[in-house]
Length: 344
Image (cartoon, rainbow, N blue to C red; front, side):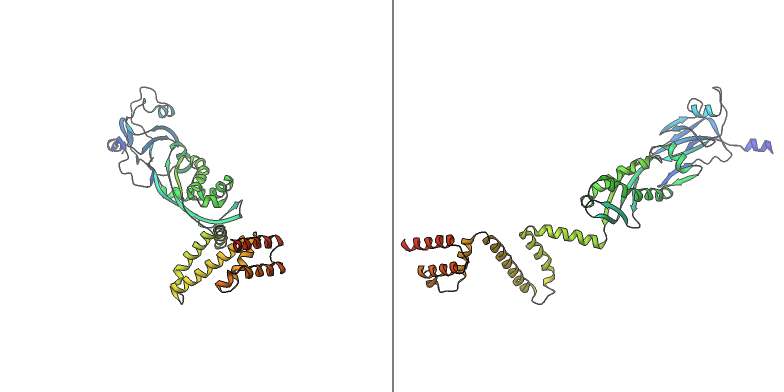
């Protein structure tokens, strides 16, 4: 039986990972009872790293290239197995391939709203989601902290843990930045950068490198969104022209649904604009008594001929003075102007 085992025993001459499926981060070469032939070939392709492991301990690491397996190319393994320089026999060792391809388009999100401290609102509860990408950077670290004795390890197994890291780090990253939430929410690129700064050391702890992190959407509770909308509206009211345009833009889509249609809308807008002009003029005249006198004179309903009569104008000015609507100085100024026109 021992003779038959010796005869059927096979030696591995070429070690390579030819079928590398997407999403597989680690693959252990299946030796079973076979041994590696001394002087055999190791092929490591682009996007791969090969690691020789002896009794759970990482020995030699090979990047892309073609290697002849001997004591010269396996210095650490030679030392671990106490081989001398004359070693030339088949040997056993675990060979594990790792994928260094960039893992693109990985999704993240907050299953439940998370609470953040904010300088403007005190506390903010939000949901967010986006994309991130990463790659394997330190195979020794990744093997010892993540994959261990697995025959294969995939991105699907790893990424739930990465997503938990992301969600747990969002609050600390945004809160520690010192920037108001509104400033960050208005610039999702800035928000992504701040979160990525906090995530990079965490990814590195597992032998990974965070390549990119993107915030695609941020949603807020209804009550906070209404408060933000109100603040925006009040800011627009600071400019009456913009506020009128804002009202017009909001009213037009509803006009066809209301009785009177666009005609009614036009009348309503005209009335609103007229009221706005009257308010603006009134506020301006409050600081100009002479203008009040002139406006009052112009508002009197009288035939054109009577309105141009100097005596009538002086009588009206005297009436305004007697009622305390204008001062003596205003009366004297307006009276002098009427007399000047009368004298030519």
